[in-house]
Image (tube, rainbow, N blue to C red; front, side):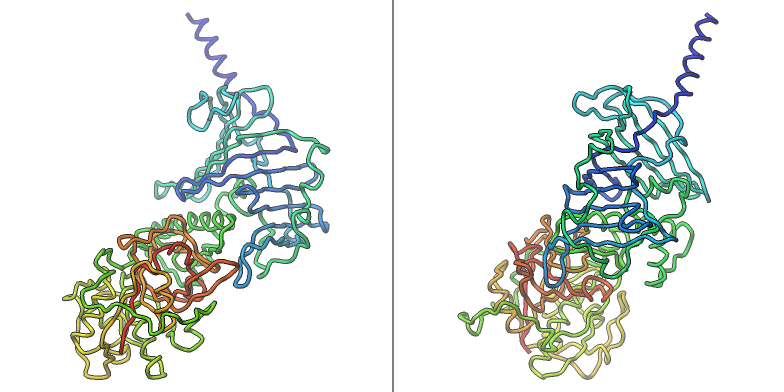
Length: 556
């Protein structure tokens, strides 16, 4: 009996002392990068030459390629990105952007495996099909598990590598989990899978695989000189900085974000939660911008808000009745045979007032309503007027509106007609970003005679109406992609365009075409920090997101 126990103990000791196999310096890998909390699964292909200090990582089937060359073109190396650029004048033009390293920030290759595997210790094994030890093709053997933990300032970062139980080095998955012991929750997590892994030698890579100019030439500088060359970028940077778990580019970016937008948090716990949300959104925007989209995204002042807080800013009440409000007239174009121009922009004429900020309050319906009336006022009287959203929020409850908890434009129109006008922002008082008390003002009031709606979901009818004046419209803005729109033509394949899909009220101020993509020009009320100075170009294709579903205009 004692002999059996001794043998068992020796076997366990041998297993626990197992050393991690030596990884090749040159290899090809392909698989996915997933960020569970951000709902991102991003395919990648990687060509790694550790001997020559060079790497290339393609994502989304080559939609974006990043090269990190340690000795080219100069002694400090360079980072090059081959991407599809979308600007205000071109859509999806392939470009090579390059930034050179320096003595203080040299560039080195970016691995898709941890650089220093000597830090990992054997912690057990899992059977094929369990945990991250997936079955791929004929490879169905169990996996050995190797783990490295790094702790600093109350945080423990755990790095786990799963290797197939074979004679050669065959990685299956790499799991990273950042955990904050103080608050008892994780703040970052990702999984890298290796669905294919092949060792290489110096002659087995394709000849120009590390030459970005082979895809597009010439390589130029980054437009805003903002690219960092001091550290690798993206998820794989964690493989480079395991010995510095509390210092990374996202934390630096979060510090800049707080300073820029004056963010102040009430406690360490809130600061931690906001930084975690920011990190998730940072990963999301980076991943989305590597796709071949007709628009680009960027982090903005909303980047530390929860999805629930962002939802509070979409205050258009879902209602099937709003496409046929009881007091509305049916829009009839003055000239149905008018020649439709390629583009029209009411901002150029001065008919659009400045972008405002509704803050975290579902009052978008009041901004859409006042925006339509302000534009109609300019077109009739030749001068701008700023109307009071707070007046509508405080006083139109009897018509179905609920201030920060949502409303509809036509209910606001009905109230304005009944009460002989709406107050100016100056006469009523400032916008409070919350519910207030209704109070009357004597003058000045801006009155409307009536309002009209275009044919539901009829893009052509909405264009004819928009040629006359800006339109109050409703959209489906529920998708995360809309929250971080930057520029280009926004198209969201998951967007709804039925009346019950619409959850946000905005103002359509023009239309046009960019790179073959027809768009609406839409004014939002999320400040000039959002979108393109507060505006978004929304695709007209198939009435995406419902811009033409529920469009109204006012008559003064």
